[in-house]
Length: 150
Image (cartoon, rainbow, N blue to C red):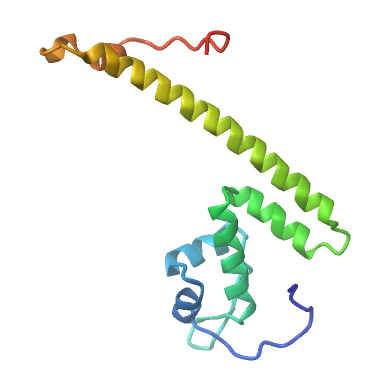
């Protein structure tokens, strides 16, 4: 549910309460404020941060988006879409489809790394001396980055 503009907060929460309710660390909350993912909260006369309930939902959104692989920059963009009244579902879908493409690229890269390690491991069989270990020897040499043979 999108937060309504101009609705006063029902209760003021301290940062520790927000952290507990959202299952996000206090330092993470402060970091998100510095990164612009959360608005700078009002301060009590004592200087303590004062949050409303909507921050808990926003932190849960951020945490869930991170679990889906979105970067903080991408999450900032998604939040911008969330608060833009012109946003359509297609805009969010496009961001999600791009994330799937990014994930597919990472999977291919991880599979390539796995194949390379398996090849090195197979070359390690029947070798006793560490100075003959293909892994050590391979890590000591400059790597060729030839995408055509990958």
